[in-house]
Length: 416
Image 1: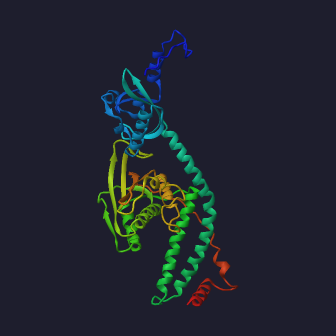
Image 2: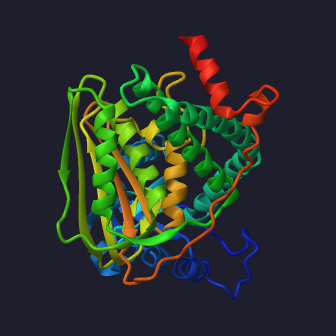
């Protein structure tokens, strides 16, 4: 049914043609206008071409509209079209569209059903909301980061004081024990675990205070090998580790401690996903991007990168979980098995290294974590001071005139 508009009914001056007005709106609007017939594109306006980069002539050759939609959103768009065609009314929906350079753009659309000269059409008008969604997500993340930043220093300070007491006393105790002492191994483990915990606390403080990193020209294969040597002792025999490290890997500029922290976080997640055993593969490769690489809401610009891939054959994640893995305090692990900060810190560290982290997963099959570090040609290192904390905790536990070693030995003998 064709609707006729008159200039009088719409308060349009007689000197203007409404058809000309509509034509100018289509041609000059920044929004996208798409006309579909039998789900095929028969018209797009310049706004759509500007947004997507697709050639106008190519699109007019009756291309299937769903081919332009992000694979994860095709079902949503299909339901939108069915609803519009079936009930002959407008439907609003947000969905992602793939551009000519494979970039992902978010559109907020409104649909309408039209009948002209016996032919049925679906008219879609859509506004590009990609930047707005990005800013909204950044604002939410910034608010969460601010909460962590306000809370973390106090907690980290107290935890670090406790750990320094444990570390100081156990180190003194270890130094007084002979190598063949039956409990020396246990005391050495206490020292090792306390040192690791203290390092993590320092990292949390650095994270919360936006402290600078100690950036060094780094061979990523060397760091991965060091991490695997330690990590291999934390997995059960049913889990296999496989390394596919490129022998010609290029150098990156990274804080080596933070890089290890990133790798440990990712590997621990992979290990925890393999409750019944499986395979964890760690690989490196040099890649050169000649155009942007788009993943969901992340776009990696062109350039040279070192790609580190951690692939596990574990339980995987569904889309709703995958969309939240970088949220602070969100965890898919069982209660008391995860803090929900691991991947948040991973992403923050990668951002500070001008890198990117991309996660792909399929429930019941796999999870792939890709780390992209820009290749460096700079051979200079950047040294930054480490945050120092108080170390007066041990004195609280000493009796008057008692030395730390004596206090530690007394406590140890009481436990035995």
